[in-house]
Amino acid sequence: MENNIIIGIDQSTSGTKALAFSANGEILGRYDLPHRQIIDENGWISHDPMEIYRNTLASVIGVLEKTGIARERVAGIGLSNQRETAVVWNQKSGLPVCDAIIWQCARGASICQKIDTPETRRQIKSVSGLPLSPYFAAAKFAWAVENVPIPDRKNLCCGTVDSWLVFKLTGEFWTDYSNASRTQLLDLHTLRWSDSLCACFGLDPAWLPKLTDSNGFFGETDLEGYFPKPVPIHGVLGDSHGALYGQGCLTPGSIKATYGTGSSVMMNVGSHLVSSEDIVTSLAWCIDGKAQYVLEGNINYSAAVIKWLEEDLQLISSAKEVEALAKSARNMDGMYLVPAFSGLGAPYWKDQAKAMICGMTRNCGKAELVRAAEECIAYQITDILSLMQQAYGEAPKQLRVDGGPTRDAFLMQFQADVSGVEVVVPQSEELSGIGAVYAAGLALGVFDESIRENRPVRARYLPSMEKKRRDAKYAGWKEAVKLVLQAK
Image (cartoon, rainbow, N blue to C red; front, side):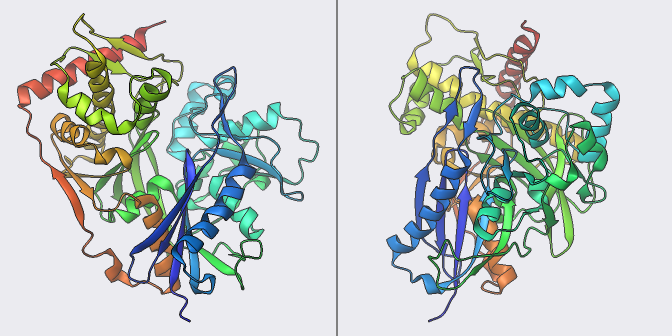
């Protein structure tokens, strides 16, 4: 029996899915499990690391049993994961010392405020490529170390979700360079953990995982006895980096945007660092010892805005309703929703900002509010595309997109219109998982380079809005954001 199946584990903010891929890159099946979103009275957001691990085991078993694929056929595993989410655990017991602090959670703001000086901000940005912010994992690690009783600090592990899952599956404590570059603790120039940045946050470098290539060998797992013999994990990428890799954005200047709970807009800038004042520089990946860098902007609320309409306002019963509602809305060009529910990410970096709806008139009804919610997603993406053009010195020619909201034709057309860039939607929505699976399958020799060819496209959207109207609408958005930033 030929072992030529690659399993992709895509561990996201909302759940964990397993994908089974054939030797020609076809998705044979998927299995999804959600996990709880733990929100306390402070609005702090957490996940249970043990629940995520149990769901990881169950999803892999689930996809194999659902598809009828013999477990003996699995050649390897690739893993993509939610980034910046911080997990702290005891290496001896294998148990977390607290719930995982997820990337959306701003509880690390007190840590950032404590160390915030002009010199520290400059140092952190120049070394890590990231601005001082509770968004990234370092402040979350520091918050846990300061606020959670931890009697045994000698055996402490501080890692992102990839490190946690690799540790639980294999017993090894590793991370790849893409995830490491989002902790705010990696020196982008030396590709090593920075002692000086660890000291800034009061962290011991010994608590951090070992570093390896994104297509490196992370260890083997028998999935707690499910596999007849151990299977290698040979590809790990942060979810957004996985999507960039899966989208085929391998050359400098290529850009993708992932529409998920939040959004990541990422531009491959090649083998040399490109810096920007308002968006961040990270590693795209390190493959076979060769590093590539990215410019990136992150948005806190993307599809989560639609979830707010559904769960909190109860204006809709499903996200499937928003496209038709947005198309039916009356023209409200002066109305804007700025979704700063947990502050504003790039390029504003204002974690204390509050959400605002402005420019409403009596004509605003459900459809108009839904449309404003749709439009705010595209405006935020456009903010970042504009800054990337300034930093890289070249206008984007195409935006490759992925994530569930890309099924929404209104949103995709508005994205093309307001940004003035062609938007390309691939046939598959599983780009994060695909990227990790490509890295694993290529490293293991299950795939060859032809796997990247002939990626089918589901839809293309060309800009059709008159430039004068586009410029006016975008200028109105910038004014709305200014109101949010100026609010006390």
